[in-house]
Image (cartoon, rainbow, N blue to C red; front, side):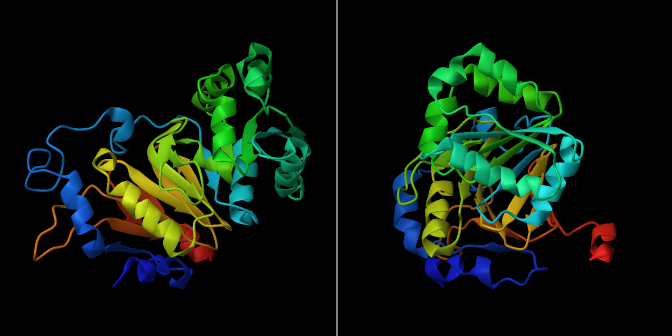
Length: 317
């Protein structure tokens, strides 16, 4: 079985199926050999020394407030409904922040706002925080603190990082979450929230994200063998041994709260876990555990275990 075939699994699963599989790495064994040594790994394939806390998903400190990630338009109704409830209802104030927009920020903000106004939310306001100068201005950061929920949107991860990285606005986003309020990331606005991200769709190189969701590499618009293979390669790197990679399809979302993730929407969330990958051998090729989560399925980052929907949810369906 090759990676191209495995990449198509995400579109072949039925809407009520969750599986955890191990991805064969036969084609990447030479790559593993170049990047591992017996001195770096013990007999179980794990690093002798634990990585830094922010790069270990099982010990990382997740924010107090909920985060909803959406992989692309059209956004799933289930994720928007969850956002309405978690923000405090239809009368809550929601800021649409197109910090990651490569084009007209007003157009990007208007498109994201429609996902919420069509569900009857009355106070959805564009906040055109579209430059690093604005993000560094304490007055703009103070404006962020006025809202019950903040939605980051746009199509360019590099633009989003340029605007927000190490600014007063980024600090305000963290304070917003620590106060228990909702943060939503759509498209590139979701990708920049992790510890790592891919800056460009056709580039394997990853870079440091905002780290609001620690120890995660988040990829949006995730579909097809090429994106799957790229995430496999990123999660196979030694520095990613205790992280997880999250691939968000369009029409799907992921609610992250208190170290647990819940899939929302009709498509699939792909989560790659390298922690049990082991050292390749003749009897056992190296592998990554892959969780394919559909609507209602959960994954606890601390225990690295996936669970089906709660019984009440299943009965409603």
